[in-house]
Length: 205
Image (cartoon, rainbow, N blue to C red; front, side, top):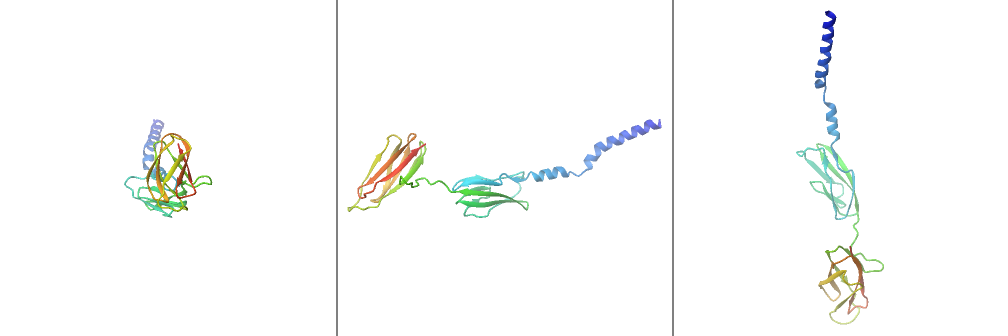
């Protein structure tokens, strides 16, 4: 009988230990895991001049205050919501501060491709999409005597764009190109008081 009672007592102790001890142990594992999950969604990113990207803290309660800061506002700025905007080519570090801790993201800003850029062959190179319009100016050096000036336009191919005049002067004209169908044309603009014509390559994608 004593042996049986001892066996029952031992079994009870095992059951009590299984149920009670886990509740008594400090919950450090869960706390560490929660702390480790707090992070910035990006540690490095690339954006072009004039474009934006969104940074955000992960694992942070909505009630927590997040402070954002850029190491170089001339390269990239960041607003109170973590939206970064590229200003000029270069690198800047964006820092998010939460509960006294700092999290950083290195942002590289690349120079934007310039529309209407001058090439060795053309005075301007313009790219637009079907249904899109773009405004550009064509400037001339007036090397012929006279007053006022008139402009003439010659297309290498018809149907790709439509062209409208929105203003100008004797030495400069403002034009609006509207993409109608895919293709590339060469627009030649001449000025009655200039000996040099201007060639513009326009591509509709």
